[in-house]
Length: 417
Ligand code: EPU
Image 1 (cartoon, helix red, strand yellow):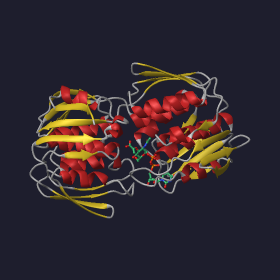
Image 2 (cartoon, protein in one colour; image 1 turned 90 degrees about the horizontal axis):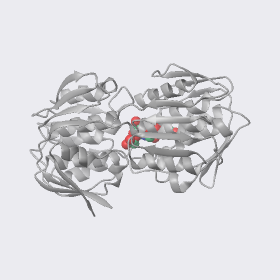
Image 3 (spheres, protein in one colour; image 1 turned 135 degrees about the horizontal axis):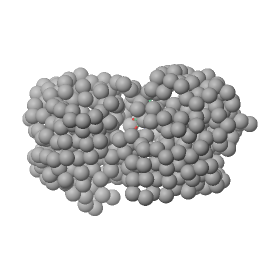
Image 4 (cartoon, protein in one colour; image 1 turned 45 degrees about the vertical axis):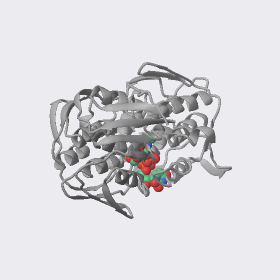
């Protein structure tokens, strides 16, 4: 296992470029199952989760090849309907093959993902949605076993807007007979990016970016060449790192159009941002002010930025309140930040973050992807040496983070634990 060793405090300076979005790339890769033609995706980040999705597609009989930032997938020889537990347990997003497999083969066996560090994370919306599209779905031996003569358009209502739920069912509905209407659908930019790609493949989708999405099933989808959007969460993480270290950094490739809530909160807590171009901004700041944050579905404040803001707000001049409304157990980083000198008190789904003057280096353990990022941010700001253990979590979702931070002048290196 690898760890990061960070010598602080650091001051960051220079330019950094944001990578392609993990959470947009994953469903697009799964969408390749919908066609027998080549799906060529550009700007795909080189991450563990992307490699896992490629492996899963190969397991299903597809070809999946990476060359630099481009992935070429061809599923003309799709010959399996099974996403095995061994792969799904390493990446929950594997569930994204369920909808496309049902659309193309009319049957699928996908392992139930089980819980994860941030919450129980049920998949009942995915299952109920397929049933609404006339599939017969059972749970057998830990697998979702789904069959249909052919999917038929139907009406799907989400109790809570689910990102991968919306994506999975949108993909399933593209090849169903007739019209599907999804209500209270997720509006996240990654869902919109997937819908745009599906439309280029020939899908008929109306209302993208809206909470009501209508999909008119078509007989066939074609191949596509598509450039994945950049990662708004990586961009936000870099913004927060600049503020936590009282630095000024130029971030290129920021999907600013998709970052309103992040940018607004950043400004509210004292962050400075000067937008130079549509996707370039100079960010940073010297003083950190307390605030109140409640995570919400898009366009609200993303749960995937909660941990990173907790790190920077630990250094604020006063007390902040952070409420996590999406996942029931997404405060594991708080105890680790406290090991670095933060003063965070958790009560249920609320954290009171009392500002302290400084972080002091220590050994801390990453528990999930965004928790890892918050510990790296704190480690950059901390005085002395911080070791962040178990960064395999971070490797799932941040491309070359230590290289990008080193190029900004940070003293950070990867070592074996
Ligand atoms: N939910 C259900 N039933 C379902 C599906 C979801 O109750 O069938 C609940 C969840 O428990 C949660 C809420 O609905 O309380 C929203 O979860 P959602 O389904 O939107 O989450 P997800 O699709 O599993 C994606 C991202 C996550 C991100 C969330 C929320 C991908 C691959 N994953 O997960 O990303 O936190 O949306 O925005 O897109 C990350 O990148 O670190 C990450 C965890």
